[in-house]
Image (cartoon, rainbow, N blue to C red):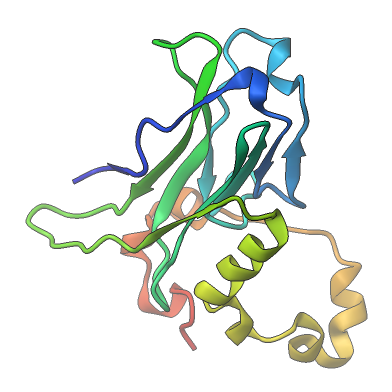
Length: 184
């Protein structure tokens, strides 16, 4: 199995979209009219990684309501995910939120999908809090505490980012044991 699309075929009218929140550093809220600049207003990003995507989370505010969508990853497991708005070629003026899990399974492998959570009619803040707690991000501790006396130097340092699956030639499923999230 290469990809799992979930949810599939939830259409939203482009004209009804005041905001779309995407997890691109430092967090991007696309405003009204952003998709008016070109005919094809599709924009997909990959979590984790490119281009600075820090969460498997997306949310929108529409004139018809609100929706937030994210995956609940199991501790120690991150599934590569493609997400973002995609123009629906069969329905001009409409788009859908693309959310595709890419587990990277080998032949004959067994995989259990992580839960995908939808929040309807909730503002961004409580859904972001639910994402944080549901994905155990509170367990990671605060950067200031972990960095100790080097905190000030660290926050003033340039951000260097490497997509390990591209740079080292191995994907998330192929990472050496010492490079997996949570490994000591």
